[in-house]
Length: 216
Image (tube, rainbow, N blue to C red; front, side, top):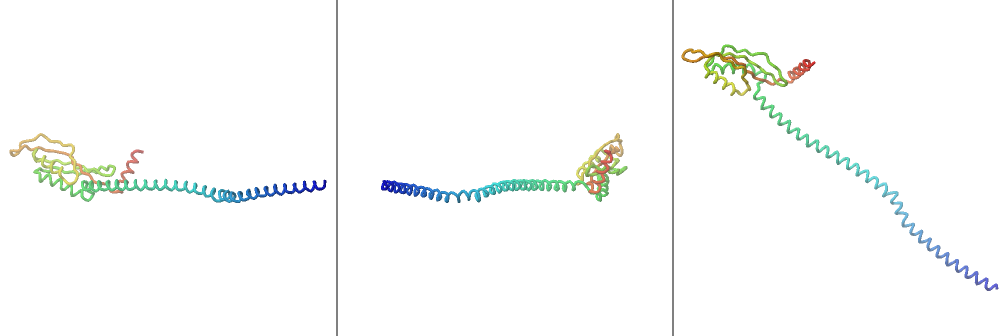
């Protein structure tokens, strides 16, 4: 009986040794697997995940910077366009300045107009510059003129006026009934000549203030 117990004990010990060995092997495999997996998990949570968030933040910042760059490029493009437009305006202003006399040239221009009447064969009966009429950026300078001469000579005078390098317009032409004088039909003519000049900055400012007061 005792011998049977020994056999049973031996079998039990063998069984337990076998089972324990297998369990230890599985535990070793689990530990080995965990040893491989844990660094990956740690890398994801400790390195990859924060880096991924940082990358997304940088991508957002990059998109914002690119938008700002596009905005600046558009502004630069518009600036070039405005510069070209300003250059064109300055060119047109320079060309217009050649047609409109400045303040210092007005007496000379009026003398030229009077001289052209005489050269055209007209007698200048009166030549009366009137008060300037300031506009937004220029002033009108009217001159009432009365002459005596033939139709033909009046036509010559008006043609010469139209060909002056400065702008001179002719308004309110009135002609009396012609009379026979020295074998020629002579008439008295009156009209208003208007020339123009640019206002200087101080005059433009004063004119603007005057307009504001009128509106009030």
